[in-house]
Length: 304
Ligand code: PAF
Image 1: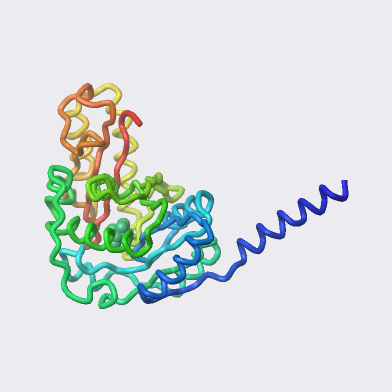
Image 2: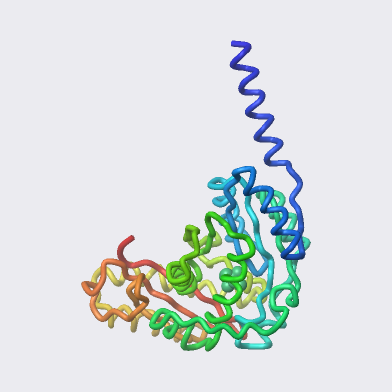
């Protein structure tokens, strides 16, 4: 019995040491590479969570999963200028590195990589990424250049971190599909893990942009997820076109909201469907302006 107790005390102690280990904040590529080289040589698996900071429970869920599935976890905290097609949006993007570090230390991340813009882009990135037709629809249509910027930064981050697994939220549904395609085409030796949307208790999908909503707008924005959930029931007895109209009418009737697009697509090809039988995996992707704040959400109607 005493041997068993010693064993459990050791295991428990090791868990505590692992959890309490001080997280490192790193600003340069060279420093991060040197740190990760040591970790890799020690045979440790590296999980990576790319973020633009302003972290919330959605990011925390990605980090939790990465901590559970890897030996060490790196989180990047970098507001990537090349993916903003709207300068105002870039200027207004919340920057909260100190609070982010507190959350990440609590969640058990080993490294936070917070580089300067010059560190990532010592000269303009002229690479062009094109994964048509995945990146020409929806966000690709309304935010020209956005996915090119996402691929520029994510490919650089993958080359710097060289993770075994990288974690992305399903809230950015199209981004996840494009990154999967980029990894496949560029043959990055890593696994992409998609993680479910995290919602507030009342249904609002968590987003760093929610911080920009006034109390009144926060209430108005709720109608987005409400509509999507109602449409799920509606879709069970209606056609694709009718479901499309249901969502469009419902957002049009909601005060303070302006629909940019709602598309019912195949979850793999991201191409529009016209019949539920067109696919085994049907997803509805929506973008709505609530005042000046652009919010996205999605819901699965069928499959996977
Ligand atoms: O999803 C995001 O926060 C960003 O697009 C990402 C993947 C961190 C790239 O800047």
